[in-house]
Length: 399
Ligand code: ATP
Ligand code: MG
Image (tube, rainbow, N blue to C red):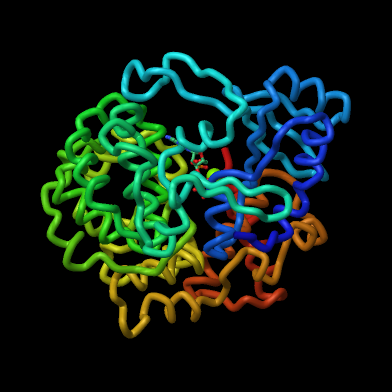
């Protein structure tokens, strides 16, 4: 089968050419090939080759495209884009349910593809768009099925993260997990205890961002796989997760996690504990807290809505089943939606003789609040007058 190459692949052809010109094999591989067949947007175009890492280094260093190495994968720069180029490899025996003891290189493409997790992730494609599908991935794509390459139990025993990846791809693509793969996920689930929270976070976040998180969550509950997610014991009321879980698909982590947490009925101290058990950024935690608090309010204030912004207001409105779209229309009716809409700025403050300093931020904040709360109009003359008063007041209060 020949796949029509999109621009993302065409732009990377010189990397394949470079390797082929030195006598090596080189292919596009993994998720990008799957997404090309599905006509989904392509993000990372990954490349696989039989050139050994030091041979690659030599080739790309000479061409001045070498951008370093990360976990045995070479990074190649081309026209401002970075490509991961990995040598064909066979994973050795797995020691601890997550790390192969050793990795050996091979000259055989099929061997490299056989160590990949699912049939739909085990495609390779050459620069003419010719597809290499040794494990019936195409068939599974057509049937919308997630199936491990080889024996599911063994593949999950080698690396338990694959269990979560199965549910992640199932949600992301709205595919079903094949029976044997599903059964094995239940049998091997305890090995998830050995997987680093950071890796679980990446997969679970992608699951929440997918087309069908409901089904994956439901199945993970039924099979007891959720018990191995960080902080899961804190979720004591799952009824809403299955009855009411709705909302628009979003690429924002904050929105997707807020939705999951809202329907998991996690609030206040259990929410703090729950978020503490995941390794996520403090910024994300703060965003989730803010959004949950907003959802808890019967009527969020105008300042709350301004703070949340449009995207969050739309998402929260959907989560709340806010049919009349009150939250959203309240947001739209705000006098301003962004500080840039305020009819005054730092230059205006300077022009009326206020010395530049931290006081600018305080004055602007005060004017913003007054405009949003409808205390004054968003009109330059009015704002200038208010700014002068603020300056005098703040100046006198200052010790
Ligand atoms: P995404 O669109 O989310 O990037 P992807 O399929 O590219 O999806 P990655 O996590 O980026 O997924 O991994 C790239 C490829 O590496 C996969 O398609 C798969 O072939 C292989 N792979 C990744 N993780 C594993 C794993 N734990 N076990 C086996 N193969 C894996
Ligand atoms: Mg990828």
